[in-house]
Length: 199
Ligand SMILES: Cc1cc2nc3c(=O)[nH]c(=O)nc-3n(C[C@H](O)[C@H](O)[C@H](O)COP(=O)(O)O)c2cc1C
Image 1 (cartoon, rainbow, N blue to C red):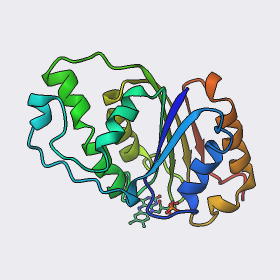
Image 2: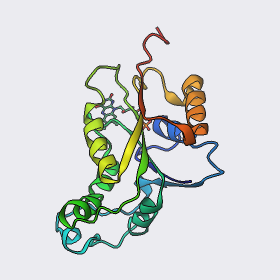
Image 3: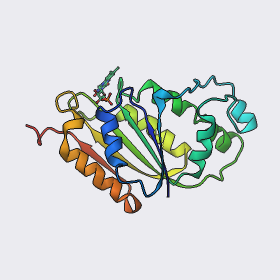
């Protein structure tokens, strides 16, 4: 199984990185590749629509090789904290470059992409409310559809300002367990409001 993970937080070893590292902790037996988006040179999409004519991106940068990797993947994992109700700018810059897939599918009619399973890990500093992850959900829904992630699993954690994730053994253990069961993971949504557990 080929698993490709993208880390969209600006900070290493903090909340989002802890989620991702826990999820993939025991995935060494798979073909696993993790990309730290903030360390990569990824040009902003300039809306030139070269991909709408040629089926590939006009840029030659750190994403050029990643497209092939995405095409071959069975599982796509994306981890991003909530920034202003959405994903981080590094994550969004990466996602905008997925326009190649949109163009191929909807402008060029190339729909021959492998079905994949998509996993979203996201966390917000504020106390949980119904709208906290809506912006992330909208962006990620489009992203996963573009990449042919027919089934998805989303894990949301609120209130990291009061209760950092990197010291939350319960969540770390749960994510390790979810990662261990990746082959049988069913589509779903888990929201950790962390109210009752910590009040
Ligand atoms: C620029 C910026 C914007 C943020 N916007 C939100 C927000 O809209 N909602 C929220 O719940 N938390 C927000 N946060 C808090 C982060 O989502 C939270 O601290 C997260 O756990 C950080 O993840 P990290 O430790 O991987 O950096 C924001 C943080 C920053 C730096």
